[in-house]
Length: 118
Image 1 (spheres, rainbow, N blue to C red):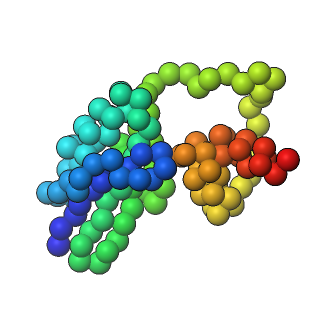
Image 2 (image 1 turned 60 degrees about the vertical axis):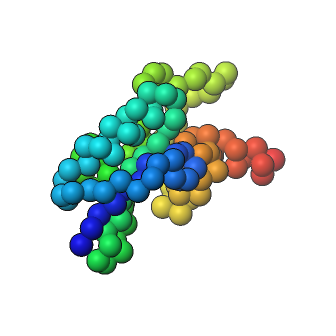
């Protein structure tokens, strides 16, 4: 059994070569690459695959997850004129589609989708 990881950008396109993971919990090399990419302004995540059963998921500070943990440059998001924070309830398909539309940013994806609808 082997595990490999990739660093993906906000559009879920690979920005690294395969990274060999030596143990189930040793993602140090992949995490360092993701943190370095984020510090250079590239929003990214770590996706891993296991060869024997083709299982695929994401990796973040809390371990394996079915959703990506996004590494990004720290800082407050840009302010929107006349914008305000809202809580909305969305199904998984809508969340996934909005994240794709917004290059990994759910709010941006929702804004773009509404703009395209108008």
